[in-house]
Length: 309
Image 1 (cartoon, rainbow, N blue to C red):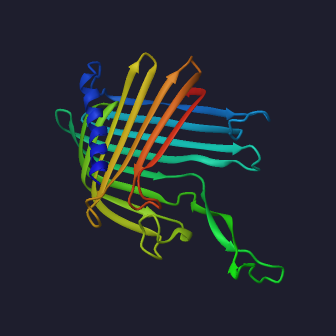
Image 2: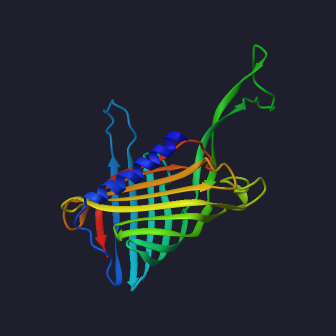
Image 3: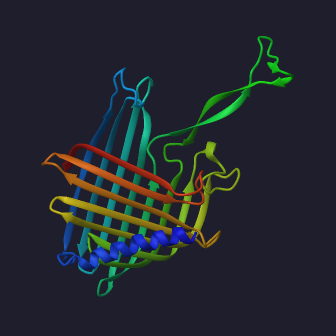
């Protein structure tokens, strides 16, 4: 757990450090600020029959929509962000595409000026996925004769290994909702940190996943109350190359408060020309209620078409 906390602190400290060196940031101005982009990226691998190094030919496509709409009116601010990210992979020989990436998230933050760069705030977050996800595991099953009796070798039943595919997620299952009051430190739309000492978290799962993702056995929902921190920083590393950083931390007062959920995402955009761009996305998640322990790591790199709107 110490390592997880250190990672979270390092990520947040890096954000603040970069911000302090950015002298061009300006305070928010009255009115709406809207903008975003849609990136469609592709990856493809192919091997001929003489290739001896190994590998499986495949096609990968990914669509990322990242849109912000923020409002300032006097001493009130309202920031909103929508992220929709979906990818599919098809290996040679497979009949269907397999989901490689799936994320749907909406953030909304309201603030009223307190003093300096500080605001009294309230936030809302929704995070889920758009499609069902499947996992494949191997199970040993007995070998049977034509009469359904076990096949024996030296009196010992023989077994075979079979791939078993199970559904691990569903549309809007699990879905996570967070909301709570707090304090916001905002220098600009590109740099802000929100702290909520009383954040409610609500988890909902489909009936078939009852008892998973933090819900009690036989239950399809769970309530948590804890503390949350959200940080956002976007910086131009050099001309036309931008890096967006998002970090979310949450600890549950009601159960294992020493465990801190971590969700960090880095999105690096490197345009080649007006329409062609390369995108690198890195995401690290730790959630002790997840189906698997440890950090979940996702990395995606691709070249494709980028549309700004």
